[in-house]
Length: 136
Image (cartoon, rainbow, N blue to C red):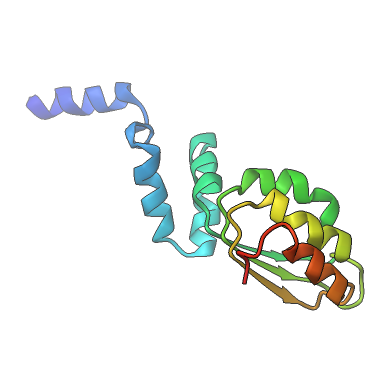
């Protein structure tokens, strides 16, 4: 009989995960792989928000121009410290100007990995490093 009342209160209380502090969810998300973490961010707006704010690493695989969306994308992932950009060698996706904007959009960035970004030159790398020398 005691179980009936507890299961009844469980049904009325709703989603218990909403009672977890954001810091706790962030720790849980930090233990998940990229695929599982992305799936968890689809559960609800709260989980998506916590995932976005606690993500330390971001991998962008681009097959087209992505630099136009950098401002809105990086506004969502402000705490990223490691950014990997994988560009198509056949299409312009990231150029010197886009690379130079990244440090102001991602102030926590410490490490940048570039792969296939054929439109990035030495001038772009120098412009990237100009605002801050904390990136590797």
